[in-house]
Image (cartoon, rainbow, N blue to C red; front, side, top):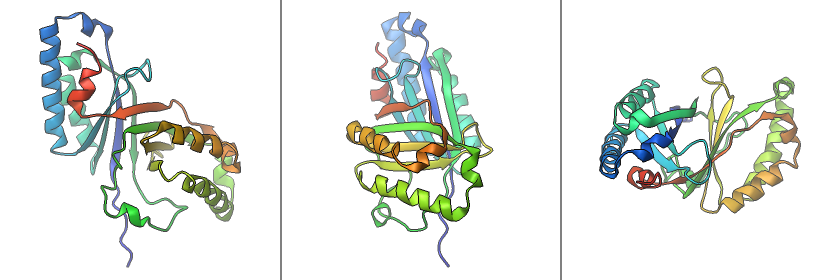
Length: 229
């Protein structure tokens, strides 16, 4: 019997710091960042967690907390603790996405290079994430037609081995149908990949794939330093 891939819930929580936070004293800001970092580091010992900075890359979000866990209760307890910190009083969540990992219905084979790594992340420098919704006409296509179209899609992806994809599924859990994550060390490779994907038939079945978030992977203390103060 073939082992079934482990399914996990994933959560992408985007945080924005209120501008009034930069008006408080330097010592208080440093204290709040230290407290916040300690909480996140403690949480990272109990569940899979990565942090990213979007400062200078988007105007409406500053930080991303990315998590994976067997239960969605983990995500609620995480934000409860984060908001209880001093810095937490100045945080908003402009965007938040909940999804689940599972085996793709269009790709039965496994990638040998993935076996020796953490299956949740490649931990490359840049991480691009966005929600996606397909047109209902996509689901009306016969399975064999969808399989053929996705085969063309995968061929384009194989042209860009430096870009790694992490697909999560949101059907019934959140507003999107998918939450796509792409990791790479050169964002220019990702730009070329997406441009190529626009030229093939599967793109005609995309209803929406925004907003798009480009972030930089950083330990939480380093990410907090990008906020200033």
